[in-house]
Structures are given as C-alpha cells and as structure tokens.
Length: 338
Ligand SMILES: Nc1ncnc2c1ncn2[C@@H]1O[C@H](COP(=O)(O)OP(=O)(O)OP(=O)(O)O)[C@@H](O)[C@H]1O
Ligand SMILES: [Mg+2]
Image 1 (cartoon, rainbow, N blue to C red):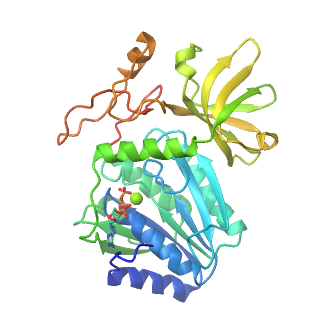
Image 2: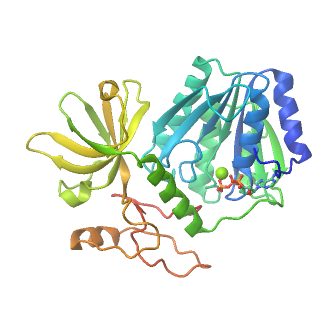
Image 3: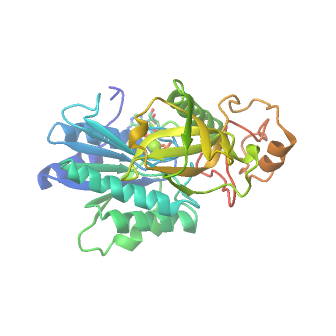
C-alpha cells in the first residue's frame, strides 16, 4: 500500500470493529471514484496481520483481482503482497446490468470458498454502479445474499440512501457511512476503458492457441444467435472446473460445427480440469486498443453499430465504436460507471 494514502478516522473505526469481533465480513459500496478499492486493500492488509483475510473483488469493470468480467477472491496472511490462494468466477460482462445472476452466484460461491479455506475476514469491493433503480436493486440483493456483518458506504452526500435505507433496521447488519476522501483521484471514462483493455492484454499476453472438442463438456452462457464466424471471433469465454471456478479465460478464434471443435487463445492451463465452457457476452479485440480506428468487416461493423455506448457529455464522441472491448449480443448496456 502506497504510503501517501490518507487514513480517515472512520477507516480505523471499521478496522477496530472487525478486530474486536475476531472475524467478519464487510461489504463496501459507493459510486465510482469514492475510494472504495483503496479502502478495501488497506483494510484487507490490516486484517491479514490478524488472521487469514480475503479480498473479494466484485467490481467486474475496474477489476483489481484477475481480468475484467470476473469476480475474484484472494486470500492473504501477514501481507497483501502475495496471496496465499486466488479463485475466479466468470460473469462474462464488464457491468452487472443484464448479468446480475452470474455476479450474485459468483460472489456467493467465492464467499463460501473463503470460509472453506479458513478465512476469518472477508472484505468485499463492489461495482460503482449505484444510481439507477436496477443498480440499487443489485446492491440490495448482493447485501441480502452475502449477509455481511458491516456495510460501509463511501459517499458524497446522501447518494447511497436508496440502498442503505433497506438495511437500517436489519437485526445483524451494521451500516457505517464514510465521506469519500477528498484525495480520491477521478478517472474519466476513456481511462477506464483503457484500464480494462490493459487488464485483458496483460491476462492474454502469453496466450497460445488451443482447440477443444466440445463433446462431453458443458457449454452454457450467452450463445451468439448466429454461428457466423464473425459472431464468435474474439468472444470472451471461461474454461471452468467441475465447481465452475475459472481455470482460464479464452478468446474464441473459431467454432467448427462439423468437427465440434472450439478453437481459442488462452494462457497455458491444465486442460484436464476443464468441465464447462461459459460463453461470455463481450468480444475482446486485443488488436484494437481504445481510441484507434478499426478496420472492420461489414458484418462486424453492422453488429457493433447496434451496441449502445453511453455518451459522456464531457467527452467528444469516441473515434471508433470498437474500442477493444465490445458489448455482445442481446441487451448490451451503457457502461455508466466506466
Ligand atoms: N484515502 C486516500 N488517500 C489518498 N489517495 C486516495 C485515497 N483514496 C483514494 N485515493 C486515490 O484515488 C484513486 C481512486 O481511488 P479508488 O480506486 O480507491 O476509488 P474507487 O471508488 O474504487 O474507484 P472505482 O470507481 O474505479 O472503483 C486511487 O488510486 C488513489 O490514487
Ligand atoms: Mg474501485
């Protein structure tokens, strides 16, 4: 943790409350750029000095554990430099809207895994998508499902009331509200896109071609409506084990219906562990960094033109609709928090 992080007194109060309990789970909620992740990492580090502590990263857009489109768990003891163990669940998109079930289930399974691994503490970071009614419902259900001991809201004014009010009379959940530290650095939408692109690029840096017969494997998720090559190319998939933990993510090269083979690029992994293939909702074109004008096939350009991409009034229109990560089929949503 960088030494220039300012630690407000409320942070110490949360740490004390958890230490005094000897174990516990905290769910951190707040809009984009409120200092959530900085707090979560600080708190996890401090708790790891006491006992095995988990960091559950549910921010699938601005992921800090694992690549975007995944929920990640890391377990730490003594220091947060190197986790004792990490686990990933695949959501398949970079915003929970339209993928709430996948995210809720992934978060719950990782909470259970943290418990099975003996973690005394669990710190949950959450997406900064909090304003719309659907976003509020998402957080209400996350809290309802995960049943944390503490909910820490990072806010400027009463912006989280629509979420927090639902738990004010809860018999076991304590709510602590923290003012967002003035030191928080705001990130623009372009920065967030580039961050995601870089996280994917890093993840796939050592990817090599693979081919798998699909026979005998579970294949589920958001199947493209068409078998056209263009609908499958660069589609983000997860190769998962029998308990649906991610073994590796992949980017589809081609689906060969005749031989029943899926060709994809993925980092080296233990192929024997793979039991299911979870098809995601986004295509990730690593040859096309955000802001670059892409050479597109007519098919691909047509599909992209259907993708809503929320305009940021503060920014000029994007140079290309294809900025590395593209929303997929069905109801693709504006990336409102980045
Ligand atoms: N307490 C703090 N002291 C100093 N700098 C801070 C503090 N909190 C946050 N920052 C700065 O602000 C940046 C953004 O904070 P952070 O990533 O924690 O916010 P967030 O709410 O998680 O944002 P996001 O919406 O991207 O998830 C940090 O990288 C850090 O540089
Ligand atoms: Mg964050």
